[in-house]
Length: 309
Image (tube, rainbow, N blue to C red; front, side, top):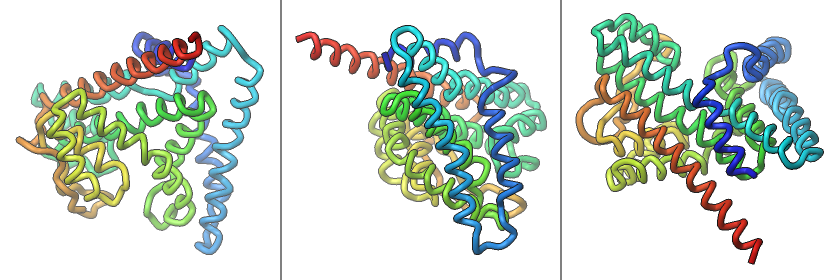
């Protein structure tokens, strides 16, 4: 049931794409924004506790509700609900579209247009990025979001079903909204950032291994092993390093965030990523999604065979 629902959810995403109206994550994000504005204290002393309580309210209530729903379903109804959950928590087609929306103007020589598109994918300042910096930032975003927006959600779905997928997607969304080290979010968003790190720890490493398996295996693993721990994030470096090594390019380096330049490690090996490498990063994520579906179906088949013996 889990493997079939996973496949159906990804097929819906492929043929339908991201829902333009009434997407549950949009409503979730709006509610999280309202709650944060009301509950984030002006004093640092209560910031962490308020943030943890708000995290629990936003994430655990939907998880419990979904657990109650699926406990009452079986057969086709359960399959449909699970497939729809996969569809709503995974954004494979959307990720590819965002990457191509940057690549197309970049390949056409429209650097300003490409900067405008990459600004919707990354949090760094994009106004003064060069062509190579735009290409590198896009490849980084595609590879990292492949883990965050696709494979980590699939991992928790396979492990805990629809409630697990909702748990992960809610936690990851709150980290994206609250998990910043700014004066406003440093304490309030502390719980959201730490919980997301924990939930992503194993999926990120499985994603890094998967990128290597469907790309240049030795280079991907070598880069992940040597460069993965060089970032402040306990997870992102492994994914980007493995992905860059798997497609044989380098990316990363200095980037400006909120007007301040940050020196970041170089990931991968080989020439600096260019516009044509964006499609290669997208293809790597897509091949990895096929690998995960095949593994899920294979595991499901072995389980059925074992139960029938």
